[in-house]
Image (cartoon, rainbow, N blue to C red; front, side, top):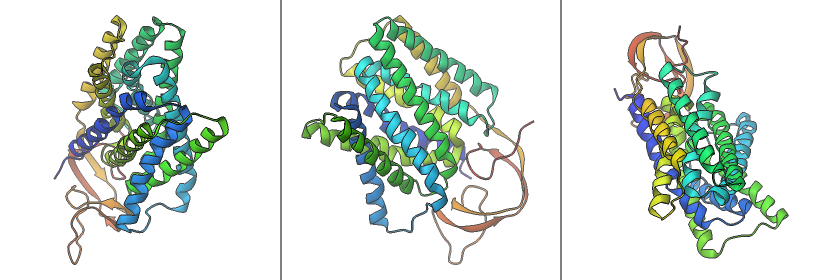
Length: 344
């Protein structure tokens, strides 16, 4: 049986790589805050809508999902990218990339209401929150603009953390359907704001760069992020995704940005320690599954979906199915519908 933790962590790392390297690119290509956000999510919408057209599958989203999707689009595809662009314009790509680690902190804090969070994770959260405070001190040393930029990026991470937790209950849906809906709504909203405010648009070359950047960082990366949430939950996915800021910082450093002070190096150490704690965590114990009947995307190599098909079905698929009661022991998390048990 494949470990869901390993699969989920690797999927979240892939999402982090795509998102992380995009931040310095957005800092270079972006112009108006609303226009930049619009182009990023227009690129993501192309991925989601294009995939829907090519595959021709029935939509996995339901009408009851619409209010949640509207909130997801508002937080994750409008408020967050706008605040990120504001922050990038005032702090630079290097500091902003590192501050994006706070998304993991906020995601865990919000998810703690419904997911089991152990002492190791709380230590990691404390370390990463301290890293954010250290980066804020580093930004303050550069003047008021740096503080405003740092606060804007922190606000973006909070908005994305809310988005992450709102999205997790939809993780059994087709991820590309969620990308199409979220990105289309976000792009439409920010396009309207750009037109109303007379926001400047970048030149054609930068428009193309932002569309490609959005397709990868906000389209493909988001689909992978949702898949990871299906395997390991919102808290741990957000924690592993904290690798993204380090990748963005490395790209910004290689591009010639040298804005880090002593506090920033302390922040890097704290963030690295927090990420290591998350990646090296193990969660395994005897647990009970009550009899359950439901419908969601699943595979037959995860140790929980043992029902037969005639003819056999390989890969991920969706249909109503039943689980018999069972007691067993394997590595697991609380992101899927099968591991919502309590812990004493």
